[in-house]
Length: 179
Image 1: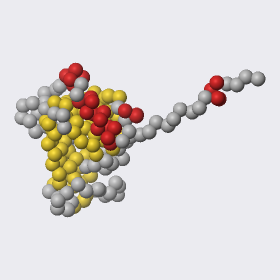
Image 2 (image 1 turned 135 degrees about the vertical axis):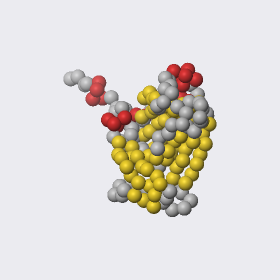
Image 3 (image 1 turned 180 degrees about the horizontal axis):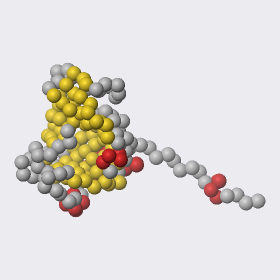
Image 4 (image 1 turned 60 degrees about the vertical axis):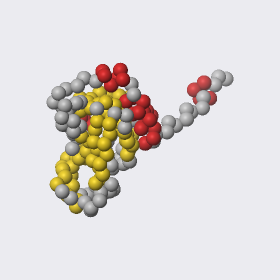
């Protein structure tokens, strides 16, 4: 009688999902890799990006930001994430409010929800699900480079317009729209 080695081998332990802290640690390590950061092709007019292998099945990106560019208001749906500026400086505007995940087109925001964070090289942050923000390179003459990681890999990005206190859902993008 023979016993299959596959049948007698214990199952591998399940891989745990990376936490916000894991993602922040990852983007910090990648942002410190000067050779990798310098290898990103930079375009004078549009953002450039390279997809990276993130920890634990996460999605990660190295992004170049020409002077005066930004993302516009958006969120990353059900993904948690982290990003860090590797060179140059970025600014993040965000909302300190949890928005309904579905079923609305326009919301009136309350006073006191706006947050602003300046992120020079070596600075970053982690964020939770449904975090609404915009990221900008406000420099008039210098590129910025940043590292971003998301888990689970981005199922969609919701894009918004903002006029005063009003936030309007404009578009929902899926991975096939940006890869």
